[in-house]
Image 1 (cartoon, one colour):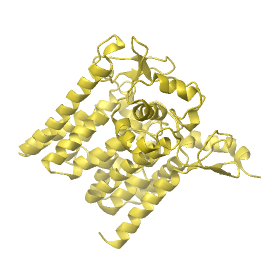
Image 2 (image 1 turned 180 degrees about the vertical axis):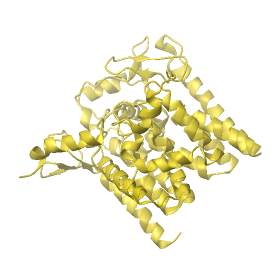
Image 3 (image 1 turned 180 degrees about the horizontal axis):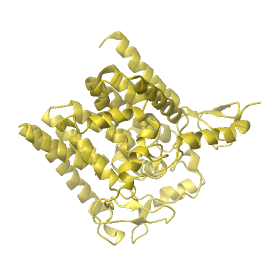
Image 4 (image 1 turned 45 degrees about the horizontal axis):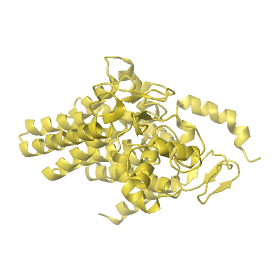
Length: 415
């Protein structure tokens, strides 16, 4: 690799990890035992802390694993309410809605799959009992997001990973505890690696992280079979199949006392209810038009509202050959999911795993029009804002962000 390329990669790494120390705006009265300081009224510097959404509920699983060696999070939620770090620094002494289901004997098990927290627990283990579990877990997740960027670079070159790193929501989601950066890295690896054992491992890990990824793997396996590459097809299907078997067995063992059957215990959480609703299938799906256009152009949750240059990549899907069939299938799956909006999010959260293949489509289209460059600039602005200040973009459309800044400007300005 040329020296210039290494310097470019270094810029991406420094931007991602550097941004994790900036929290703006954030109250300087936050009870934060980690090193921190406030610059003026609107720059709060500290090692990373979880922000919102499902992130604190993934963190509580990490704490349960490294402190109690189990998946019962009941005591961990209670400890957080008493001032411990199980839900993160932001949610200490906070009665947060529990994403958990009670068993007959009093245990509570998270509605979220435990596999990403299991990976994080390996790195967080030396820091158990301290506030450093939180930033370490986030930094490991950030490394997964950077992995997606660097893996894609093998296919799409400098322009590809630059666009993925600095012009998409990947930056924002990589600085918190989300499964999306991990799945994006898995999908990028699926595009690059061809060794059957590597494909087996990619399929196994990707499906455990997010069960809907099994559709991507299945279609990719059919693509390999169509091309006459039977060994690779079998490797993908076997990896995904073993992953689903493991997920099924773990779910039956861990959640045996919840009083009902759930195939993979991948039900959805009903906000504010304090309980989970579960179906036999992975999640509720229905034919609907709202997801088809909402994922793309919804004012607050549409991918193209914040990253419009990706339209060239999406345009590549139907004409780019069988390489893009898994992406088409995945998009339709998410579009027909009743909760396609993804809760409290920035842009289209559930499409983040698809970003590597979408950026690859942009690179293959090779757009040169002035309008493309303008839209790339627009996309980079929002990616940087989301990467540096997620609080400004979560659950807001671009118009809402501008309105919010105008409303709060007199309060934030230091004079």
